[in-house]
Each structure stands twice: as structure tokens, then as C-alpha cells.
Image 1 (tube, one colour):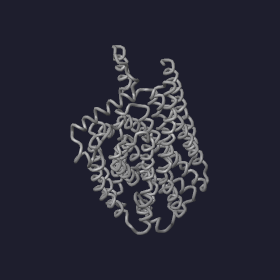
Image 2: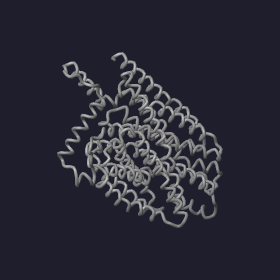
Image 3: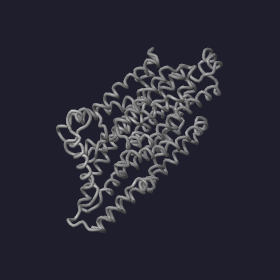
Image 4: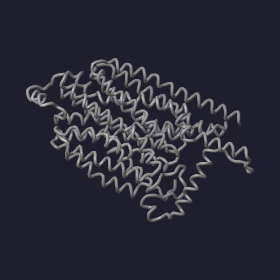
Length: 493
């Protein structure tokens, strides 16, 4: 990392972190925002509003009809959050950073303006606004993940840090809920979020590259404001050529002086092996999709049904529901502190395995896979503990459930992004990230039919716990693949 570019890199890192914490993943603070919508009588029938004036608790059937509409909105928004990452990932790969960020800003601004001007009479607009908010947020995350490339050996730590910041941004809706309770309207809060789009635009042109941040990073790499007043086009092209050379040195074994037809054929086979089609159809990728889909479905189901669960466990006590909702949202903020530990674990293990690889002659691919195994297994175990705690109908135990939820979720998305960057070629990251999220989005649609069962029965929670236990197959098979790669490398050596 060039010392002259360090201030620029740090400015990009810190502003990107602020962007992810303040905006990218606000959708997952849905439980806090839902409390405000209910207080404003969104989706309440006129007869139900009359009941609210006469009693603190509405009838179960009235509450269920209202909850189902809110659950459907969250299901659609979380589906779009994942499914649209495939087309947006393609846009990011094809049209690069500036175009992708301008699209994100457009969606995000439109969404916040729509929410700002909705009311109980126009609550149906939430079916449009919340999915748009989700798409804008995930594009902010995708364009910021490449910042890890600026920090070389700390790449995994930065990637997981940004994913943790994405999780922590769900606390923004808690702030909006607390401001609402102090008399500041929902409209004022969302108009402020809309005005912040000016900052997003400024950051896009001043602190982000027009294209992609390369990895490995070439010397004297510049972008944003510096590239507009510094590096010329010829220098940028030279930097791109140098990056390709560095990448080939990192990924391929050292060449002999006389490159024969056998070596050329070997390079051709390696190129075909690393094609997008081969990556997407590999067992490694398919198992990863299953692993992410099951754990993510459980997280979405829990967030979507939490308000109903707390209402049931508290016997309809709104004060207690509000207190636990605040506790849940506060724990979400600490996702940014939990996620980097996963990245540090991966970076430390990768450095350890790289030293061992120099002695044994193991491939860089085997080293990357080995560093991922403990993180994949730990994420599955944390999610399993989270499911078991949630399935026990004791109100006080939900504090432990909230803690396990935020830790497992911050590990989940950090691990997902890191696995895709380490286990597959970097040129396919945007498409593979989008594809894995799109496929897992289809599975996430199951949360709405499961919602109709889960508030009345713990059987769904127990079943999800069993499914999460089966996700341990993924890290086990990745470990076996590591062993096979190491054995192959030692035999070839």
C-alpha cells in the first residue's frame, strides 16, 4: 500500500463505513419501524381503530390480518434485497462503480421520499418503497466491498467489517422510533435521509473509483479526486497492465524460461476451469448457496415474526414489547464490532497456511479454502444456538437470542462475501455474489407461508434448527476439498 495514497484510502474506508452503518442495511431494523407504523394505524381497518380507542388490545384476528400485510412487505423487500443483487452485480461488473452507485442513490432517494409522504391512507405505497430501499442499500454494500482491495493482507477483515456495518445499520430505524416517541414525525426523519443523498453523490465522484479497485493493488494507484487532478490515462492503463501481471504471479505457479506447448495447454485449461459457468456449477458454489439460503431464511423469519412473538410472550403488553424491540435494535448496532473478528480469524489462518504452503508447495487456492473452514463451521454453530434459544418460549431468554442473532448474522454475511472472494476468481465476484443472493432470495420467499404457522407453534423454529444443523455439511466438505488439494500439490511437487 503506497504511503502517499494512505490518506485517500483511509478517507474512502471511513466514509464507506459510515455509509454502510447509516444507510445500507436499514431494512433489517424493520421491527423498530413496524412499531411506528402500527402506532400510526397503518393497515388498520376503521373498526380496529375504534377498538384501539376503547381498549389497549385488539382482537387476535384483527392483529393477525395487520401482521400478515406487514410480513408480506418485509418478505418482498428482503426478497428484492437478495434477488436484485444478481442484475445489480452484473451492472457493477459491466458498467463499474460510478454507474452502479448512481443507480443505488436513485432507488434509495425515491424510497425515502415515498416513505416520508405515506400515511395510514396510503400505506400500500410501502409495497413499492421498502423493496426500492432494499435494492439501493445492497448496491451501496456491493460497491463498498471492493475497498478491501486497498488494504492487501487485511482484505478479509475489511470485507467482514463492511458486512458488520451493513448489519449495524438496522439500528437507524431504532433512532427513528425513539425520535418518533419524542415527537419528531416519521416524515421529518425520512426527509433528512433523502437529503443525505447529496453526500452519497459527493462521495461517488470524490472518494470512489470510476471503475473497479484492482487486486492486487498496483503501485501509485489513484482514483476519485486524485485521479481527476493527477494520474493520466496512460498511467492508469499501465497500472491496469501491472495489476494483471501481479494477479498472474499470485495465482499461477512460476514459469520456466522456455514456455512450451504443455505449459500453454495447462494455462488454457486453468482459464477454462476459472470460467463463470464452471464456478457457478461447481459443487463448492452449490453447497455454499444451500448453506447461505437455510441460515438466511431463519434470520429473515425471525426478524419478520419478532413483533408477533414478543406480543404473544408478553400477553399483549405494549410497553414490554416496546422495551424488547429497543433491546433487539440496540444489539443490532454491535454487528459492526462482531464481524471483524471473523475477518481477523480468516486473515490469521490464511497467513498461517501460506507459511505452511511455502514449505509443502501447496496451492494458493488450497490455502484460501483452509482459512474459510473454521469461519463456516462457527457461523453454522452460532446460528444453531440462536435457533434453539428462540424456540424456548421464555421472554427473558430473548435477550440471549438477540445477542446470538446479531453475532451469527454478522458472521454470516461477512463469511459469505469473504468465501466468494477467496474461493473464486475476483473477476467473477460481482456476478457470483449476485447469483448466490438471488438464489437464496427465492428460498427466502418461504418466510411468508411459515409466518402463518410460527406465531402459534414452535415447531417451525425447531425444524429450522434441524435444517441449520445440516448446514455443517458445507464446511466439512470444504475441509475435505482442502485436504485433497494439499495432497495433490504435495504429489505434484
